[in-house]
Image 1 (cartoon, rainbow, N blue to C red):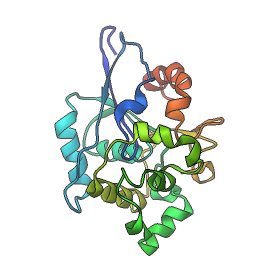
Image 2: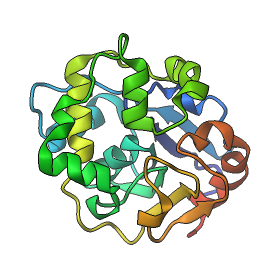
Image 3: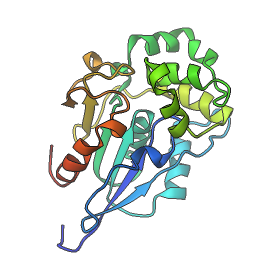
Image 4: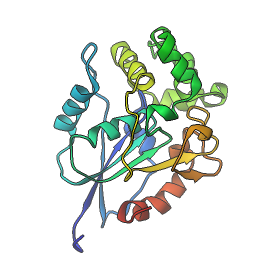
Amino acid sequence: MKKNDIIHVYFMPGMAASPNIFERIKLPENQFKVHFLEWIIPTKNEPMISYVSRLAKQQISHQNIVLIGVSFGGVIVQELSKIINTRKLIIVSSVKSNKELPKRMKFAKITKFYKLAPTKLASNIDLLSKYALGKQVSKRIELYKTYLSVNNEQYLKWAIKNMVCWKQTEYSPDITHIHGDADTVFPIKNISNCKTIKGGTHVMILNKYKWFNENLPTIILNSY
């Protein structure tokens, strides 16, 4: 990298979340330019490749970028990396393949139980939070109300289906996976080859932001 080269870093939030989940993440402005990807509404039964292609065309305007995705956003950035050139691929609180999905999601796929998941965000915020973000909803419901912003039933049906039914079985050896050992959505026992954050929950991008601010520059610039 030349001395004055700026690295473009694109962040993808989790399911139904707004880019506000990254509001506390700060990277040195002399090295990095931060961009926030936002969810677009899928067409009915839209294939993943079509969705990420539209997302890239509408919102990504640089080459050789860094992609960072949280939770379902981690799935999205992995799919994006298959169609665009990336400098670095980082996922947080996510999975690298369908082999790392928890048993309840694998069961939901087999039984198609995911079709019954609540998809009206405004009226079912507590139920959706339980399904998509784990336990202890009573303590975090206000947090979810703040950061879950995509209130579109078609999107939510699409997102839940594509999370549960994700087809990827192998992952890139160059991926960097950051995961909390207290994640109840994607339990650490199912996760391999990751940088483990002690006490990190599924929402650690919010409450462990100091760790990310201290470590992301090094992770991006070097092999980790």
